Amino acid sequence: MASLGLSLTLEDFRRIFLYPRGIAIGIGNLLVISPLLAFGTAELFGLEAGLAVGLVLLGASPGGAMANMLTHLARGDTALSITMTAISSVAAVITVPLFLGLATERFGSGLDTDIEMAPIVARVFLITVVPLGLAMAARRRWPEWVEANHEQVRRISLGIFVAIVIGAVATEHDTVLDNLAEVAAATIALNLAAMTISFTVAKAAKLDDRQATAIAMELGIHNASLAIAVGASVATVLAIPAAVYSSFMFVSAGLFARLMYKRNGEAEPVAATAAAS
Image (cartoon, rainbow, N blue to C red):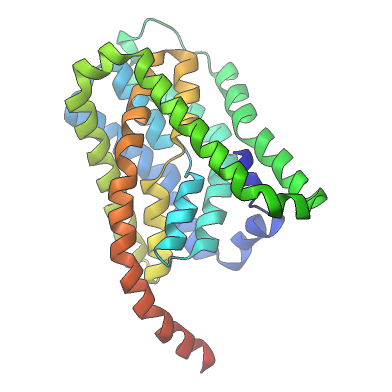
């Protein structure tokens, strides 16, 4: 979140007033469609209680900073991607505890612990809004330092992310191995369904390919670190779907980026011609 904050300015939040339709559709997909797809996927694959709640927690998590990078590589609308990530990260203080509570009511009878929402809200706030705000303040106060060191911070954050995933899997390795096939199938299905449906909804709303690419990427690359951190603070089994998801999401998103790279590249001259006229 700090790494993301170093790339944000207040303009990224103000952009919601400049491009309200694209952002509204993207955020609607992220905050409503993605969690509901997670509920449906958990039901479809008959996941046990902890894994089902963990999958919904993942589906309710905001987009990740890697979605911004892959959107850029796919020649998608990077500004839209960054704005959606920023807004959904702040909204996560409400949406993550909300869907975690709903998932616990629906699936959580098999959990060994009761989930109190107030500590979850505080935890999400500390994980998302606090580092995001501090990093944005640092960028505003020391822009030259941020410009010089942002790439290094990004590499460090990626290394921490990999360590978090490995740690989550290692902690519950028996449960992971016993349920790997169904959890992997469920997470891949959620990933593909979310990207496909969000892209289709964006196109049906008459957004262009670059905007639709950004929206699909945002639903394909969730902030798995947040899901793991929140899930593990309740019960380590809740972190397993996000950890397994992290192993697959870059494959499907990378293939999608490769597909859209050429398509969006062909659309850019057309857009430029239209703008000039």
